[in-house]
Amino acid sequence: MSTATDPPLSPPLSHGSAQPWARARFQPGASRDIAFYTVFNLGALLLFHMLLALVMDSFRAVATVHAIGSLLIAVKLAGSRKTHDLAIYACGYIATADVLWRMTKSMVFWEFGKYAVVAVMGLILVNQKGRLGLSAWGLLYFALLMPSVALAVGAQGLTNALRQDLSFNLSGPFSLALAVVFLSGYTGKRLNISKLLVWMLMPIVSAFTLALYSTLTATRLNFANAANFVASGGFGPNQVSTVLGLGVVISLVLATQAPNHLLRLAYLGLAAVLSFQAVLTFSRGGLFNATIALALLGMHNLQNRRIRQSFIAVMVAATAVGVFILLPQLTEWTGGKVTERFTSLDTTGRQTLAEADLQLFKEHMLLGVGPGQSRYQRRAGSLVRVAAHTEFTRLLAEHGVFGVAALFVLILIALQAYKLAPTALAKGWVAGMASWALVSMTHAGMRVAAMSFVFGLAVLPFHYWRRQERALQNRAARNRAAQDRAAQDPSTP
Image (cartoon, rainbow, N blue to C red; front, side, top):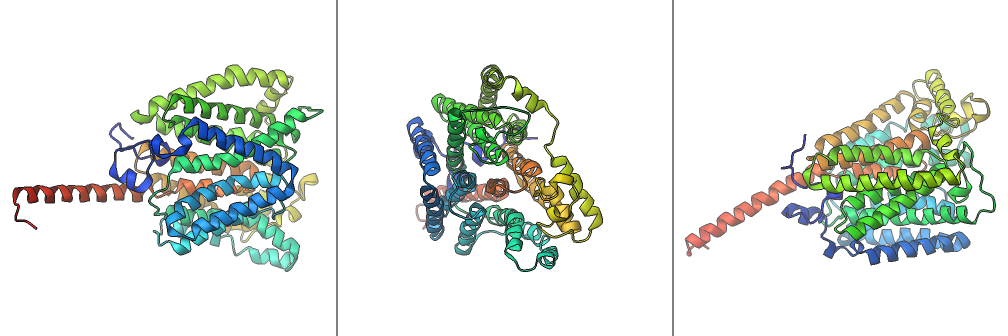
């Protein structure tokens, strides 16, 4: 158990640390160093992305330029070692923007966001000599999914349908594997997690804007015990709810570390409106993910005296707003349907799909049926051609015992990162990020690029930072000793 003497490590939750290693490795950042830590600049960013979303929704060409431009900027930053940290911010931006590009019908291919993040991280890996970290486990995870590809090729041949199935089902695991390889061994010196979180938040605000605009301008808005496409901006409620839930987590994390009360209130307000819209989608997964992640973060944050007070204040405020303001408004607006929806145990077909996947696993236990083939072979009535929504049962059905091994490796990566995290705050970050990604996979497969990137954030090399702390402390001690000797003996060179 962590004590109050733990070093104030947690990169995403630490501010203005006096530790020399923190300034050298992470720079958690006093407010004077980070432009985002002013309400004015944060407001300007938010307003820009809200207006940008409306323009993108009206003009597909603008949405397309935004997608391609984001990639080109990220590639440019990744091409120079001096800007690798900025390239990671761009990766985070792209990872949460893929749902926005789908909502605005950008003329890029469906999995563009995942491959864009892969391209940028791969380019940085080529240009930077980093540690291996958990790279072996990340590579093993993806390698275990390869044997069953032969079955898909045999079933469909080298067709365009095969390409689409492989891309849809393997692009997520591929980007997750590379995120583990890259981020677990990252050695950049100026990475600021707070700034990264702000950049990840901006496309989520854009997606929220489209969902809110669609809700407010709808001529007819009916709520029932089912996901609401109108309140989701006309796009898949599951994916929109997922990124909105991530936005809630990011906003509350930033609120706990805000350097002043005004900015803390701004992030709390943002978390509130994102939660409100996530509930209106009537897709329960987004808030479920957020609740689990925040609960695990909270369990660890409460163990540290430095962050305990601000975390409790933020959570109490967020709970009060939700219970006394948002819930009554939502109940009135939806005619009580919101309570019915969020207390319903109906899995909207996911249980049926999962059971069908498990049956396929029993019948094809060694190699499964091949990636993307479960929807053609399962026997689940009207859901027979529906793509898997639960990544874990998909792994079993389509990859057999190799999928079981891949799932085991995935969990092992998270546990190993948790074990290596040196303080309660660091362990909370690992648990929160990993749980958000893993819980998302239970209801949204790996459809959203943010899942892979957020899981990668969970394995940032905290153990490396601790060794760096010791090395810098030892170096400082040697320097002081040398200075003392020089002061005592002026003849010493």
